[in-house]
Amino acid sequence: MRLPEGWAARLLRWQSRHGRQDLPWQGTRDPYRVWLSEIMLQQTQVVTVRDYYARFLQRFPDVRALAAAGLDDVLGLWSGLGYYSRARNLHACAVQVVALHDGEFPRTAAQLQALPGIGPSTAAAIASICYGERVAILDGNVKRVLTRVLGYGADLAQGANERALWQLATELLPQRDLHNTMPRYTQGVMDLGATVCLPRKPACTACPAAGFCVALLENRPEHYPVKTRKLKRTAQSLWLLWAHTRDGAVWLRRRPTPGVWAGLYCLELYDSDAGLRASVPAAYRERLEDLQVFTHVLTHKDLHLHPVRVQLPARIRLSEAGGWIPAADWPALGLPAPVRKLLRS
Image 1 (tube, rainbow, N blue to C red):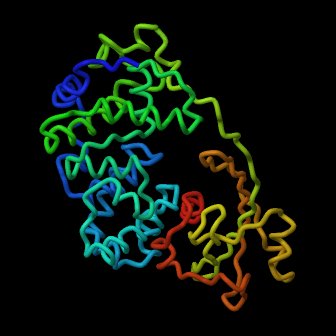
Image 2 (image 1 turned 90 degrees about the vertical axis):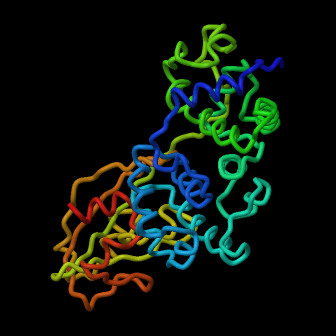
């Protein structure tokens, strides 16, 4: 496959003139801040990440502060951002950086990948932006950009084809002045995928690759990237017992790992209405109040949630693992977004 000449130089010029310049994690080579932004941006829109990023830095200004925090504090601050394994890995990674590296992030992508929650693309982003290492990222946006520019039509559902694309991505990287060019190149290819080379109706006339993009010349940019394997969506119904006391304490328990909302504090969950009602002492079952059913959408699953509310005396225990959390305390815990919304309603 013939690689386009001058691609890196064109992308660098485009990024300096048209790329995103106002993101709060730009303009820094602090690996802690770059790493934090990269983890938060996985599967999450920039507009959502901005506020969480600012709150995290205010609470945990450096990796030592994050490592010293309790996991519950981290999950509480992460609550609502979703994909909670990222928060657990974030904390575990911070602990390792402090314990094994004296609070300094490793300087190469290969070393960074040894840390919890840091995959090849995230490692490359940190190493290229912070240290100028000549390594390529290959997240979803970058795959779209490069497969279109190169006309790379191999099925990315096959690992060998994705590895081949990664090799091509590496060959396209800048060759000189890496300390200055690699951070801008990495940011540029991410910006291009996020603002111009969109999944639907890409703004091809504004693209620095418009003169040689194979997908544009073929007049079928939306054909790329090719990935045949699609995850099947599923659905699940769950019943939530919203038990509270007269003074506003809420019964919560930490969810087991693995499983839905693993590691988070949650209302008691049941697979059936009958199971929920059987868990409540008989003397209080008539007080159960069925609330409106609603759907919470996960990446590959729709959760149909059936909340049921009841006021109970604080002396009653609903399970061995749970407990009554005072009204002043539960908002700071790591809660699934739909549970937090329900409790605030």
